Image (cartoon, one colour):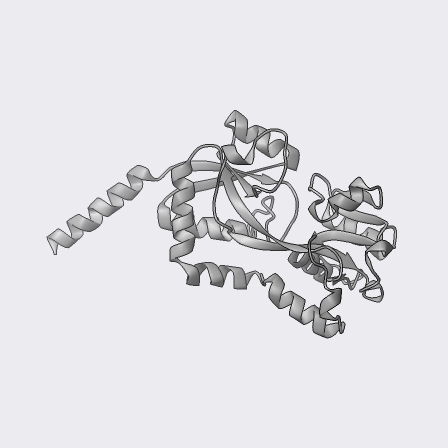
Amino acid sequence: MKQGLFCLLLIWISTAATAEKFIVGSQNIEYYPHYNFSSPIDKGVGWAILEAFSEASGHEFSYLTMPVRRLQMEMLKGHVDFVYPDNPGWYNDVTKAKEKYFSIALTRAVTGTFVKPKNVNKGINAIKRIAMPLGFTPVNWQTRLDQNLIKIVSISDTFAGLSLLQLERVDAIDFEYHVGNYYSSQSPQIGPFILDITLPHNEIPFMLSALRHQEVIGELNAFINDNPAIIDSIRARYGITTLEALTQQIQTEFSIEDKDIWLPE
């Protein structure tokens, strides 16, 4: 009995000795259910997974919100330890992907093109003006933007973008499926809007990044890999679903043929 208690004490001392406090820099955008780090209570699925990791590892995380374009600079200066969300495919002129450590995906965003139901499957040439959150990279639309075939209308918050689409001041909004659904449900006076799978869309991993603290990134990866039931239950609690499941659902509802589903070039 004494030996067992002694072993538990050693484990507790070891965890306490290695546990640290970190600051996570996060976007000051309401992007719920993925994240809303300005919320005093529920900050979204990414936060919930980090908090579960915190409980298991002993590490403590505090969150500092700021504009998207400042995040990488503050991490470079050492004012924040991590950035969430991040992705090696996102361009910025401050840090390079090869200089950073990335976790595996905490969750995956389904980004795509929302339109009014009457405009589903009208073709990509019908989109001339598209709303997009300020500071976001127009990954899905970069080619057409370079060819001056579309105009990006930057929006400061989610409701502003949905309102522009409601009033038909834009033809579409490039947005995340779960976020769009959440804010539409909170504002019944606008919508409905549909993720048009015949227009550009994709699934993007949301990762935690760091310029230092490679060992913590490794610990987080091990936690996610070793606890699939915990991670799946958190994602389910926030209603996070996969692009594959959504595609099947929307294809059936709008009788979209396989040949009409958008594929990246």
